[in-house]
Each structure stands twice: as structure tokens, then as C-alpha cells.
Length: 205
Image (cartoon, rainbow, N blue to C red; front, side, top):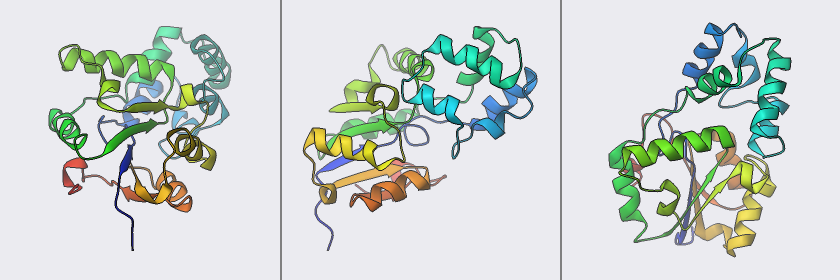
């Protein structure tokens, strides 16, 4: 029998923030990087992107290494704009739901992201929601570039459980990427694989 849920750890992209990896792929194709999707997708990233997502390299180092990797002379701004193209909108009904769910559970966020994306979506959220800070909706928002660890590596989940003093069985993890869900499940967390077209509004929490 499952334990009652006390804590929820949410993913970001595909859960609260709409994303479309194909838009970034297409943007890079138009910039002369035809094989970008072999470098980065929702389910795979080469070491360059892992370094960025775990805060091991700076934004400027990423741009320089990306030019080397892609054998292009793109400007920093061209790379940034294409890289951010996958970030879409925060549907208001999901944010309204998030406000109500925080009255029932301790809620947290854990996202594989990077400083370039973070700066963009935090500003975009503030613009869309009257200056509000997205992170303030959570007791704590964990981002891979600050944590220094990313999903699906078990130590990333364990670091959050340890810091918060959570029991894994009392904690629900919600993500749209199956390998992240499987990794959390292996550590004893309760999980939900939030597959499109389902949204958080369909969770019944």
C-alpha cells in the first residue's frame, strides 16, 4: 500500500512551461547547423549540454564550445536566440492550479535547465504574470545548473531528498520524460509520467 503523499516535486518543461524542441532544431538548421538534433533532444544531450546544465561551464564558454562543435561562426546572440526558441508559454490555468495545490502539499520544482534558458523563462513569466517570480510558487525550486546535478542521475534526486529530509515513499515526482520518472521510481519515490496531452489539471490531486 502506498504511503500518503506529503511532498510533490514537479518538473518544469512540459509540465508548467510549454516547450517544443523541434523549434530549436529548426532554428539551428536555418543557421546552418543541420544535425543539431543529433547533439540535443529531450531524451539525449551530448557532454557539452550536460556541462551547461550542471553549471560546469559559463554561458560564454558554451557559445565558444558550440561554435567548435558545430563548426560554425555563429554569434553569441544567434546561438542564444535559437537555443531559447524551444521555450514557449506558461498556460495560466496551470499556474492557477499550482497556487491551489500548494495549500495541500509541500511543493518543489526540479528542472534540468541552464542559465540561458533560466534567464529567459523567468523574465518571460514575470512579463506574463504581472511581475511575479515563478520560483516563489515553490517551497524551493531546484535547477540543475545550481544543484550541479541533473536528472536522471540518482544522486540528483537523492540530494534533494537529503536536503529536505524527505521520505522517498511520501514524495511524488511528476515529469514528462520517462527516463527521469524511472530513475525516481528506482529510489522509492511515487511517480507520474505526465505524457502529452495530459496536463497537471488531469492529475486529480
